[in-house]
Image 1 (cartoon, rainbow, N blue to C red):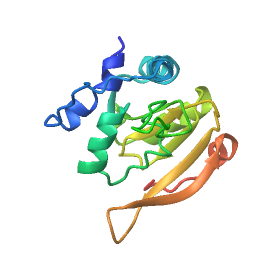
Image 2: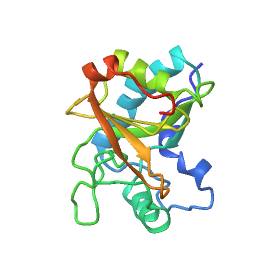
Image 3: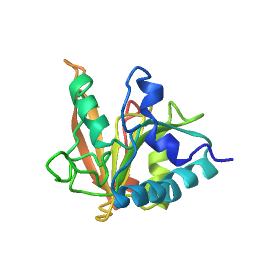
Length: 185
């Protein structure tokens, strides 16, 4: 039984930041965003849940209103012009917040909270994706879909001196599947 419906992708912030109140309830305004949300559910989340089990969205769709709140209250570890969480939404000047299109969500899979690398490998082998940002086996996995379908995989590593993350190794679908990884990743 699937845990995912569009409200999980849209209302993810209510679990993480219940104190955040939004006038528009994080509703998407662009029709392309609504389509991307449905596509993401069908292409990524439902197949993951059917194969592995329940997913929890830890960072999902971000409307312009929520984007402004995130940038004001919790901007660390965000890259809104790159990360595709805003999908096809525009800023107050009518410009796309992220020009990549598509949609990204960060999620964990119940029972795999310490083994998200298994989920990443499954996605790379079996599902269409644009980008994967892998933060470690015990961290949520960032997966996007998009028109480029670049199949780009970026390892994000914690700095030994700060809590900030920095880009580590980069992979494409082919060299990722043949790479050998350290246990701590």
